[in-house]
Amino acid sequence: MNNGFSENILVYLQRCLPLFSSLLLLLLSYIPLDFLLFNNIRPAIGVICVYFWMIHRPDLFNLLSVYFLGLIDDIISNVPCGTIIFILLILYVILSNVLRFLSAKPFIVTWYGFAIIALLAFWMKWFTLSIYYGQFLPFFIVCFSYLVTVAAYPFVSLILAFIQNNLIADEEL
Image 1 (cartoon, rainbow, N blue to C red):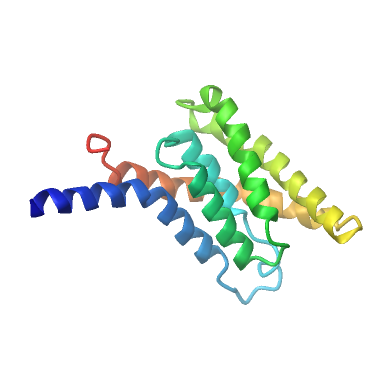
Image 2 (image 1 turned 90 degrees about the vertical axis):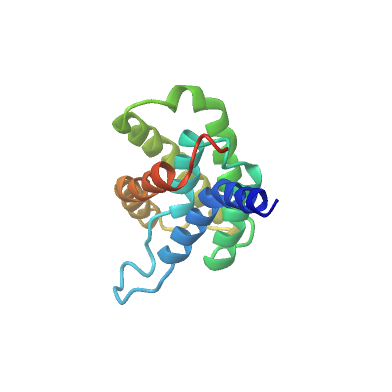
């Protein structure tokens, strides 16, 4: 009985690994650096993680995981509470509808798909924050942050693919 219990715990931890790895990468992305530019402009790790896990493992990354990741990102970042949750939930809905077009495609196709969907996410964030503050925010910061996020996608997806391929066992899930 003890062996079965430990196997159940291991399976449960493997099922939570996409959320835990996304939270770890999100927390690491907010470590303050001593560069003037990188303290204000950083890649949107939450958007990258939601996109990656929805494309590759939608069975392990559900709506609750997206909400919790957005909540932690809202708490850490300096935006009004609920903004990133809203963006990630809209992203989840969009990805749920286009999942059949992006799954099992070559990396370059998923990267282009990410560039398009991230552009929509950044536009929604800029628009939502502009409405909240009652003025149009500087658009060049959003554009540069978008470019940094699209450039960071291959590196972050490489880390997440390593986690998916080496730490999550398919036959036990």
